[in-house]
Length: 215
Image: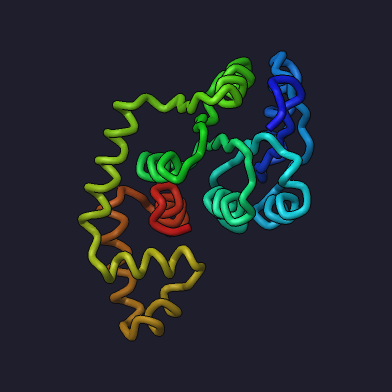
C-alpha cells in the first residue's frame, strides 16, 4: 500500500457526467491521488483488476452498473486477493443493501448527494484506516428495518416473479416458466406493486436491485 501521496484510484461508474464530476472533485480536493483508470461496467472493472489490480490503492465504485452491481466487483477483489480499499459511491443502494455492503468489508459508503469538496476528505480518511459512511446510522437502521418489513410481506411466488422480472422476462414468459396464466402473473405483479409502493415493472426492478433482492 502506498503512502498518503499519489493514491492510485480506479473509478467504476457508468454515467459519463458522474465520472466527470468525480474527476473534477478529485482534481480540486487537494487529496494526493492519481486516477489510474475508469471503467463503465463490471466487465471492464474486473478486466482491469485482473491485469493491474495489484497497482491500485483504492476503488471508487458505483453500485448499479449496466451488467451487474458493485458487489460483483467486490467479489472479484476478494477472489484476486487484492490489497485495496473500496469506497462505494451510489445513489441507488437502499438501507438493506448498504448494510450488506458494509458487512462485506467495504471501507466506505458515500451517497451521491455528498458535497464535491468532501470526497477528498473521505478518501483520505479511508486511506488512513478509518471506515466511513455518510449515511446516518439511525437512518440506516430505519431503512434496513423498513426494507425487511416490506420483504417479509412478499410470498415465495411473488419473490420468484420479481426475480424473473429482473431477468427481463415478459409476463407471458414468466407464466410459461411458472406454469400459471399470464393473468395470474399480472395479479401477482399488482399485489407486489401495492406492497412495495411502485407503479411499474421498471420501478420494481430498480427497487429489487436497490434492496439487494437481486444482483
